[in-house]
Image (tube, rainbow, N blue to C red; front, side, top):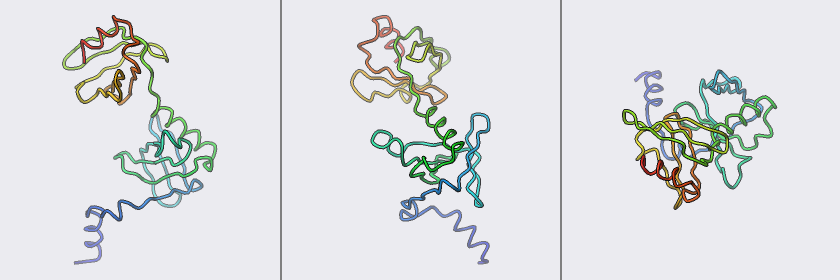
Length: 181
């Protein structure tokens, strides 16, 4: 087998557990983030580029300001940024915007309406951030119940809407909600 054939075969082979468990720490000085429309892009200095990346917190509850996971468009981890304070001001701003978008979860205060259409439900809700209109489909897969009385609705675009306490909703809101769940 030629050297090129061996290299191609190695690229196709799945990663072993040892390879998959290795953490890659990214050097903040070698990162360049760019925004293209709504898409965040990453270039690693003198190495490679990723046309679509997402940022998530490795420890969103216990250490939300450190250990940011950078993932490619296929949700594969590129590496971790240990301390985002070491990023340039421009890169830091782009990352903070992406994190704000990812972790933005409006709290539903009132369900105004919900209409079923062609296997989807079109919702109008009043949230702590204003009135929102969104569509859900396949509610069995897109409704989470993380605690008794709490419901999180996931829309077709991946946004989440948090009903923190169903009992605090008006009777009318509860009736609309449970008619469609």
